[in-house]
Image 1 (cartoon, rainbow, N blue to C red):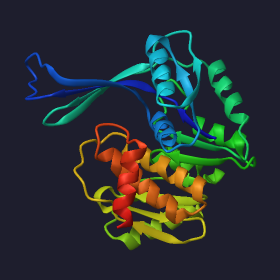
Image 2: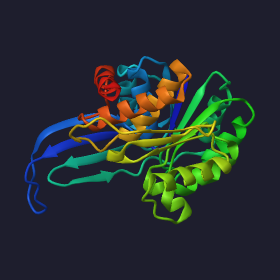
Image 3: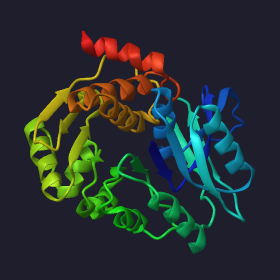
Image 4: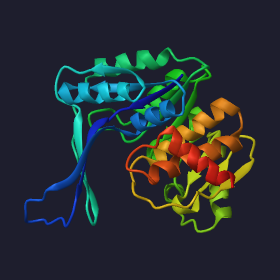
Length: 302
């Protein structure tokens, strides 16, 4: 089972507006509501690829119940901890000539609810994969990734971490199975500007020396580089297409990579499916389904 944890989930209200004006009433030409949050995105794409996923985290109010119901409709198992106060945040994403977002704050999460989440992840075994994705809200301690991974240390749980600079660097000592910085984030970690593939490979290997097992570096239109735990380097360019969606492509890459590895045991196949899933989501209005991902796999194969 692939478990995902989203500490700051959301309902994403996505609207398309033509000729947006700051000082006028703007009317949407299309609108959709999705269950948002990086871990939730991974869970949905894992499910779309035919594997079992269970989304964990916290939910609050009517928005939290709606988010959880949506995830179930997408085929995910869910086990969110209900909070007594507040509401799961709503994020507004406006697609116009320029894209912008207004993100909600999210509810306060008491210590006893954090312990309930730890109890759920403590039950994971070496047969499970845990995905920790995204930012930590201000209502949670900033070391919660470390605390969760420390409790699992030595149990053989494969943990994938997709987080920004400091969060990522602080968990390397627990030897995550997979980390996925993009090329810019990788450079920022070491305060360098990376312009060549060889530089990216060098610094990816530095992250391995610090504890990571597999380092997957996404590079947008330039594809991805994987340095696997055996020091084998793989590089793959993405299929060509029109990018219409900037949300969820990285999460889809993580989901595809994990699904590819779990079903084949091959890191090369994992990179192929990860690249296909990330591209498929970038080329569609929301998270890619199985048919769209399979179509990208065909393009990569040729």
